Length: 287
Ligand code: NAD
Image (spheres, rainbow, N blue to C red):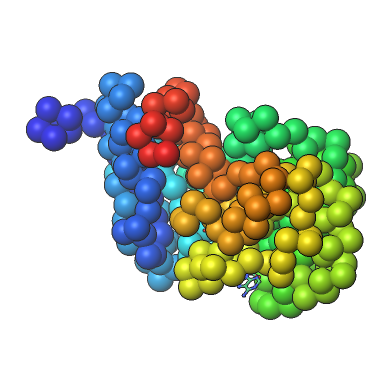
């Protein structure tokens, strides 16, 4: 560490709460060390009550940038100078870039997911997808998939506090992109079965499948799946959710949330350093 950190080392942060479980510090610091880049990445416990001061600190200390996670993603834009078009459309920021004192907010979750699909030879462009979720991860994926050219999107969510967000997302997609989006209640299992049946891909972007909902899935049984359906999950811990276990049983091609995590990080890494993250090495170390 004495050799690694010098008076020249530049700092990149992560502002969220809780955050000690995050794999982002290990990922970015490993990539900096591997490429010999003089940066350090540290996680800071910051919630909405300390976020404004933390961003002021970021400016004052001239950090290169920061990641932002829950509960700050939809709040931090208030303290920034500019937003990328995708961050503006999602109403969320996961990456701050300090461009000579101007703080620019980006969202890399959606591009991370789309890049992970490419990395797995899954091509949803021009096709129909069905997706469950209306929170941060789901919104970023839905907006980016629509911007990238998915033709039709059926979005399902339960009628909880995220429902209004889903209504909003569908309206934004239908107004601003060529994708046709429709919203359904996730409890309408007939509609869910019907929409999955003529989709190329089904994605779970809810918290169902990870703690405290580990062992659960947004579909009740394997009759909702077929062997040529692609099934993806944003959850990466556990690596195999109940949904992906069912998909394996049916013989579907599957992708968990690891690639999304890796490629959202790689996109942020490129924004801060101008360099490509060493993906093959990172897969070896983290995968
Ligand atoms: P969020 O809190 O913003 O959204 C939660 C979503 O889950 C909402 O759509 C909500 O309606 C739904 N939900 C919650 N309880 C439910 C239930 N009992 N039944 C059905 N739906 C339910 O969370 P988020 O940040 O969008 O995260 C969602 C998932 O995506 C999490 O599993 C998270 O781990 C994962 N995620 C992965 C990455 C990645 O890089 N792979 C990044 C962000 C989030």
